Image (cartoon, rainbow, N blue to C red; front, top):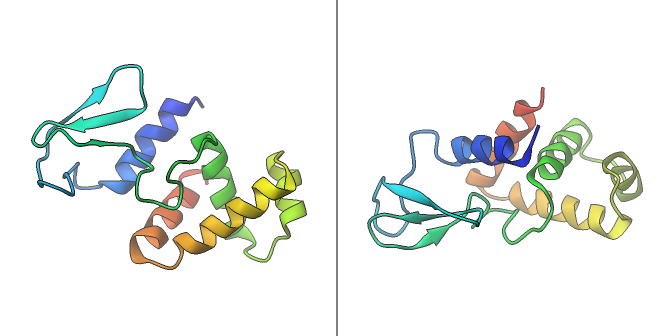
Length: 122
């Protein structure tokens, strides 16, 4: 699957009832050409599907995030070395992914996103 498929799925996961701007509650938006971002038609604020989540400002492909979440949910006690090997990442990157996933589990929205991302790959 290409990156756009994962972006669309993450958009659906974050806004299952449809987009609503966190600043002005407007439901209209449009994509910003040449960037993986959107702009609210009401207030003009720009946002991405990963903004404000445990994936915020990550440069990793969304495919890697989805696979990492599924792998972590299958075995939360997996070592960083094994995580790195299975995802074909460096050990420090794998460790950071695990840390960010654990941080995501600390709030309700993060747990919801993680559960739905994991279920998507099944």
